[in-house]
Image (cartoon, rainbow, N blue to C red; front, side, top):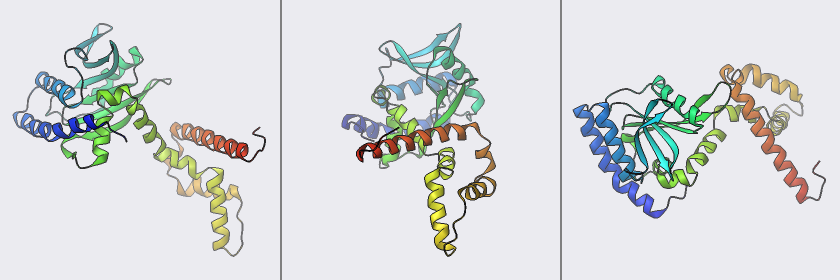
Length: 257
């Protein structure tokens, strides 16, 4: 991921600084209110948001409040649910922020205690759901690791406004067990398996249906097959493969329909 030089410098300069401050805050077991102030400083000095105009505390949503909200050009882009730094984060803690995001039509919610940052993407299905996109152990990060810097960058002001967080999510979507499960069942992969089995079995060509049956009943885990996310992954794979076939046909001067 291409991180602007000044953003990289800011991340590198502040990473070890805030890691030390987090350890100190943990040793003091600061409360939720102080943790929220600490996180506001992180958002400002490390992630590049203006703490006075772009970080809003106690943001009101239909008569209730979310701990922190990120506003860019007066538009809320991200909701942050804060828990005390010594509290172990649980998925149930993010429910309130998810409800807030659903009311506002927001895509992104973060649950954090300062040391751990859990980034969720809203899924506006019926019922509305969420997906954990990143689970960041801040104390385990290192400025020498490009992957760690990439992960931090998506939460910066520059990353949020350049859709880096959306791109990060799309890549995560593409590389998961459901997409791989869908690819394994796709025609190109089954054709490859038939060809390789023929080489192994002295010219025997098993039927595609038989290979697919073995994949479904004996190879792919049941929890993947039974999850609705597999169907969504299959649709993405089919769209991608259809698009590629059309592009190849066009290049070869063949009809695309």
